[in-house]
Length: 425
View 1 (cartoon, rainbow, N blue to C red):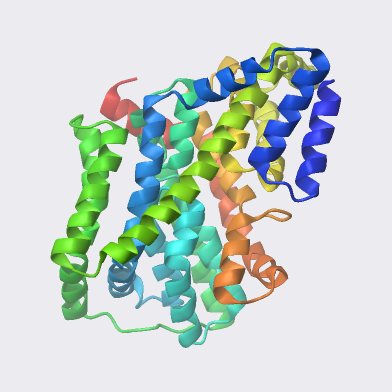
View 2: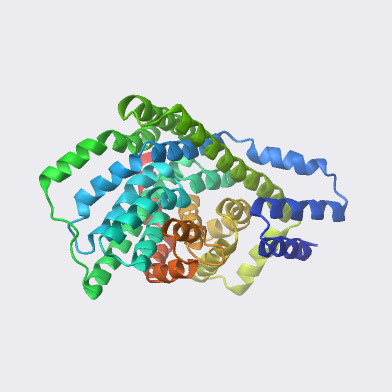
């Protein structure tokens, strides 16, 4: 019956049925065939959403949408240009720097690609960069967003794994910065090979002016991360504070947010939140079926029968997560796989925080990989180029991403040092 469950799920996905609907229909089929009470489905779906940390999700989504409407992204991009635009392949480095800054606000790879993507790709086109390179670095740098706090995938991982959201947020900081460094190193070598120039001269006056213009926008991640670190607010309360601060910027400071645009933002947020929450609810039922059917124990036995070596197990887990990330939506993958894999890796001495970073990192790379490749679809639409061109442009950047992923996997301190220092081991 489990084989039929997965066959139905992947068959529905291949036919183009949305992920949440595919998971729900698969679960209903299982309950009907097994003769289980259908009311249990509703109970499990409601139980999957009955969590205080999940309240942060709609507020972070709303904050990201508001920042786009208030044009915070333009100010961040201008500040990043002033900081690193003078380097060879300057706008490539600007792309990465802007993603690091904006990641402290959006918390999602698709939001990063959608929010900064249009600005970055247009600027790189105007400067003479080819579309492949422009889309490739924009896609690859969007991986940074869900690693550096706030991170929507980390919130869902924390709920599923019953781990501290604050510790998970801090666990992603150094891996996010490491990824940014790896991508910038790749840009440096590509700039030398392709003879890219410098896009602007360094000028202290320009840096000072852009910083002044972006200062209030840059305070947003300070409010979010600083509030969580100080213990003054929970991640959920930090998300609410970010929304009110962005509203203050839009209505009072910049005065570029109207009630009409606010209504459009609310509709976009409601649509996105509804889709995400339905996936979570459906994936919760699907994960319960796997647990109740002892699939988790069987998979653990299978992995341990292949090898009892920690390095081999971690490599297998990484490959499994990468493959799943190519097909399954991030939140659904976390909800289904974490209860299965977490006990296995913890048994080999991997901390839950480190594994959270490994899971999110793998699934974000999956967003850049066909056949689904949601980030690539978004950027191909933004740039108005064929999907295949977006894939080809992204290929070179898999190298630094995979190198960073392997370092995070086999050097635990990259993920654990900061949370242990701030919260204690």
